[in-house]
Length: 371
Image (cartoon, rainbow, N blue to C red; front, top):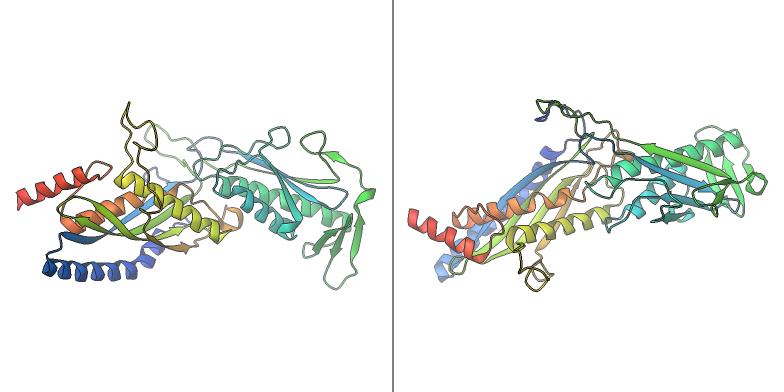
């Protein structure tokens, strides 16, 4: 049960994330202790430490309507077009929506072309924020694919187990132990999809809006239909004389429901960790000064640690093939893990971000004064 009284009955994989991290955490702690013992003998002023951060994150808009509509059109030349208003800002929405729609229709991904970023030709898919596009628009794409598939199977008068092949202006539908049915798409009347220049002979439309309720006066309700979970372990090295911190390794375990595209999921986790690194160690807005990327520091490849990702798949029953989202969640545990690692290495607790060298050095002086 959450703080808002919502009971999560599935896809709450935080325990699995922590269990997956446990052996890495133990190994990194042993390595850090060994390194510290050797550094003390050498007179090296640096110390290493290990920290853990864990998170959960509500997918989508909070307690308000969060709909998306996707359309899938089949034209007379047997080309399938996905009409998506979901904006891909680098998270890979365009790729996975095509994957989901193709799976639902039952055709290869290469069969589906994409129309996106055109409000005259696509329905509203909502904003690309709150890690919602995989869950919300992914469900809409799945429903659109299923709707188009039902239309084809209805025309061929076959059962749900039939396969579909598209090409040369025809849809060939094969049912086990029955003769193939060939549909000449040229003979079907055209309908309009989106812009007047877009025509199709069959259209599948899918709409999805997560089930939520507003919070009452006591903060009770269902603000999100599903939640992402994750945990990260950070290994850092702190220079006790300079207060500088170097992140050496991060192991990230995230419950994504189901990884529709594992490579993209790993990319999102890497990107989130890079942002979390900036939050933890260097990014600070100073009015009148940090107005460019010379004075406002962000991580570069030289700051990036070694990253290991562990994908935990605890399927979300209401998600497209069990998927949820991981765009923003991957950022959340990084800074807490780094700050915990600084504390483990030095005994210094950092309570203000970013943990710049001057702040870490001041915290180290406070530790020494207490001792």
